[in-house]
Length: 85
Image 1 (tube, rainbow, N blue to C red):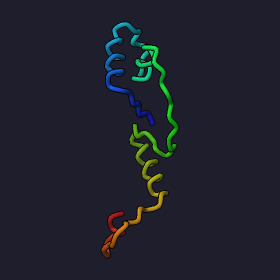
Image 2 (cartoon, one colour):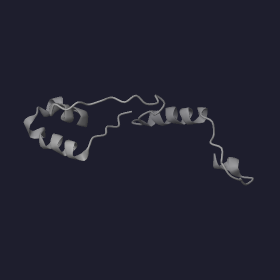
Image 3 (cartoon, helix red, strand yellow):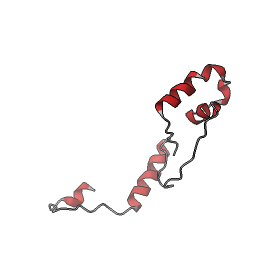
Image 4 (cartoon, one colour):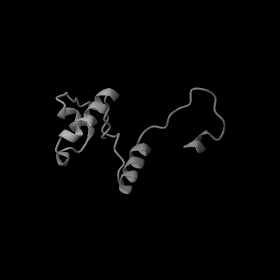
């Protein structure tokens, strides 16, 4: 997982400061924000929420999905409900 969330104004300010930085040492938005002296926090999430970058990651994601229980509809269903899964 690599999602990064920042307030738009802070991120604009960080990118505005890019000209003053050694770009070879900046690899993501978090480092840009830290270069302004701002604190960046890490939020723990579900480890099965993987980042899909390579073709091989798709098989891992499919295995994770197969291991989870199927959602159950709240209302009445038809005879072909299983076909949706």
